[in-house]
Length: 473
Ligand code: SAM
Ligand code: SF4
Image (cartoon, rainbow, N blue to C red; front, side, top):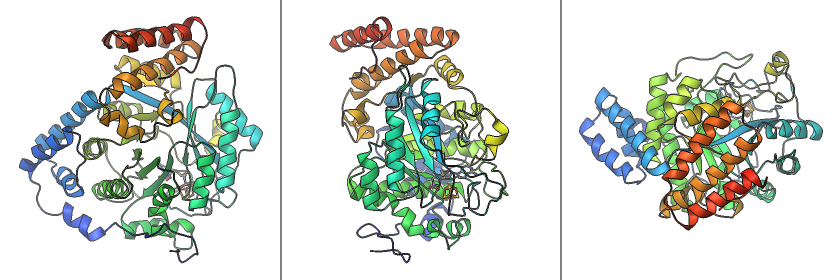
């Protein structure tokens, strides 16, 4: 099946979002009595149905909201542990043929300065990220004929090859336009991690308003079907997302849950991650404030997503201010970016005024990685740069964490501690190093004695004393 513009869709491509059905689920009175039963279901790690998610969204009385917050915190504590995976965004090119109303990269924005990193510039940016301790990137691209699958694959290979000192990039996720199946095979061959495509909004009329029809992104089904094609091409590590602030946030939470369930039902494994960026001011862009999501609703959104899709990683970005990040982290967020710069070439070019004209929107948290890490350890988290599952071919990683008994204790925590020790040895400031070592030792003490712990202690020692790197289980 093809789109009107001649692009090949997945076999059986269907638009599984029924606006009226989702709206009906959100209509009518809430049933606070029902909330407890739904929460209990999610605490037993069972994904919620779209209707159950809607019931949580409707229950906005203080008692229900507090019960949802408490359950999300409990799920986070009991199931996920206290690891937070860290990554950095790397913008490779901001040319774009689309005209998304909210984005500074849209083609009609004459104020945007266009740039595509050449190979040397890309290497320089990667080195700058490695030199502060990053191991995981998300590469971001506008949608443009120049940024085809070959170009993305080449950029990924260049970044993997670029090393400085102990620095290396071990996992690169992608946020770019939807590809056709051939394109996914090309990027998969370059060793990408997660391929992320955000639907922005699942609400058809709003989608049409935000994405003019004479653009590729204006084709709703081509985008909705984007990750189905990825699975069909053999790329089953995908991330979905919605841009909150375009339409009623509750509708788009239902859109995300519908999408996650659609993929899980069809392919046996749901999306690896869900992102929930909130709309930010963007240069040369008028912000329509009608549907902006306030902080209280944002917390509800994250907590409800946590309960609805217990096996899916939640990504919180530096669009949010530090205090908001801190508040919602406890609801089961598994990954955050830190030390982020989103202007083209901004990791190497300190002229922030110039970089601002090459950036997509304004960030809320621009603290350096070291400072974010220090706050994380002071709040009781273990920062992790782990990439072990992906590199050992343990795919369906998000599922294993929960389905394999003891998986987190056996693999995730030791690997988090090993990568954190590397960070403390190679990049941490003295203050962060001291706080980090205290946290690391406390975590070690909590691990049960046995072969695994002995092996971990030995490897930690080799990182510290023998200058060895990249140990993982
Ligand atoms: N060009 C590709 C696309 O649109 O899918 C991928 C990269 S785009 C640069 C990454 C994401 O940034 C978009 O999917 C959108 O959700 C988000 N974004 C765009 N404008 C934004 C804004 N003003 N505030 C916050 N996020 C924004
Ligand atoms: Fe282009 Fe993506 Fe921005 Fe839309 S959101 S204008 S596709 S970069």
